[in-house]
Amino acid sequence: MRLKTALRIAPTLALFHAFAANAQDAPASAATLVPADSVAVLIVHDGDQKLSEIQSLAFDSDIVDSPAYRRVLENRELMQARVMLAGVAATAGVDSWTAVGALLGRELAIAAQPRKAGDPALVAVARLRQPELVDRLLETVYGMIGLTVDGRPQPEASRIVDGVRVYKLGDDGFVCRIDDALVLSNDQSAMRAVVKQHAAGTGGIVETSDWREARADVPRDAAAWGFVRLKHLRDGLSESGETIPGKLDNPLAAFVFGNWHYAALHARRATFWLRAQTGELTLETRFAGVGKFPETHRGFDVAPAPGDWDASALPRFLAEMRLTRDWSRLFAERESLLTLSAASDVVNFATTLSTLFGGMDFLNDILPKLETDTRLIVARQDFSATDVLPVPRLPAFALVTRLKPEAVEDMTQRLFSAAQMALSILNLDMAQNGQPTYLIDVDRYRGVRMLTTVFTNPPGRASMASSQDESTMADSREGSVRFNFTPAVAVVSDRYVVATSRELLTDIIDSVLDAAKSTQQTAERCLDRLSVDGRSFVEILEENRRELIANRMLEEDLSRAEAERDIDMILDLLGRVQH
Image 1 (tube, helix red, strand yellow):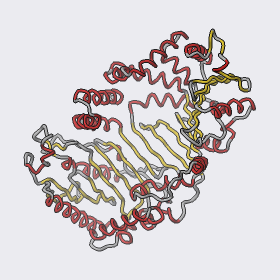
Image 2 (cartoon, one colour):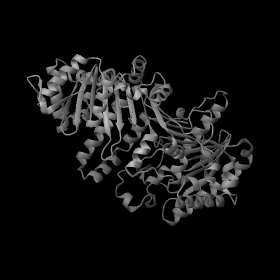
Image 3 (tube, rainbow, N blue to C red):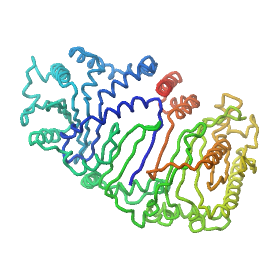
Image 4 (tube, rainbow, N blue to C red):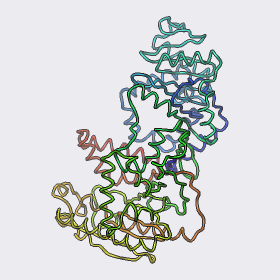
């Protein structure tokens, strides 16, 4: 079973493409020193070169000249660390960036092992490209903190283990050099296992079947990858008296993430990798040892639906979550997935929807007529021509689900009727609570019938917002958060679309109808896919700067000047990276 997420951050693609390309020739040798019983392993290729790319990006985008960067440097602890690093690097004849890059090496492996109490034991192994430089850096550090005197190790500060000198750093830090590798750990037993493993000439984690199978799953152009041995993790949790719950108490979480939950309970291993391709940074996950889903989870046992239109091409696209589920089966097996109270909530929800559909049984008559492909789409809204500016300004949302071909004609009118009834009930509730209500209208766009809404109250009316809201409104056009939502509904081709704005609905209609003119389909390998556009996310934050400042003042008890400094620092930094 493979689950996939994708993060679209175009300005950083050059960095990750270069990073991934170099990874193809880097041997997976750092992991030969990772203990064989490690539960989780992360491999990062060419960390030294990646740091150099990050440095170039920071200077090219003027991040180093930004208020955000200067504010970070004002941190006292960080300043002390920078001064110490600069001193150590200067002693070795290099700058700080070069020193850190040398420590990262050509390949970095980080492994975790559970302990009976406290945080997990960690082991970090860096295969060095410049071992002589790292030795000079270590000699300087050892001398500065008293581990060596005149270059000679102090007996109480180090110990020889199988021919390898291991230094003790503080209460729970250990460091040593083995061949061309630098090894650090927060656990004495873990460090001893690394040294013993090297002395015995064994390959540790790389000699396990989990390593071999995980490595075979990972594309050669992956910039970073790793795996978690889920069975080992579950055994470790059990020994400490903790377990992963067998049923979830949140229906939405169970239906959306139930396959992940089942895999966490039953899979042997989860492998993940990061790569850059076709304008995206993608993080993919594959579970091994899950086997076929049982009858209780057969709603997840479906083939990925092909992609026949691209939501990321929508104007002001922000994000999309795409799920492939047999909703009828999931609802039918709710008692196997959910706690008793959560299953009861699902029944109540289904009863309400059955009422909206004029007595048709939601579980038996409605859900079986839906296809497995479901999308939640998020897009920025354009408020330039609106009468009211909501505070805060939220994106628009749309739920898109497909109808089975034989059900389109019968379900279209029923879906419109149910939507109109739901909006009428919502209108009644809003009116009873003194809130602005909707005018509901039927319109057409490119031949597609739409159910649309607009608010009845013109701007400036007292009913636009509560008295508490009005006290914070700085602009006569501003209204409460509810003005973000003007629901709109349509059935376009075989898709039922429920959107929170007419604009997003018409954009989706355009996309679906234009895609229908093409016979091209994109093969989808994954049941789940999450796409996020980083630039649009930053723009939404910038639109809500004032609200972010107010929240910062309340949450942290800061003055306005302090809150503005914090928020502007974040927005400035994100803006420089994105642009």
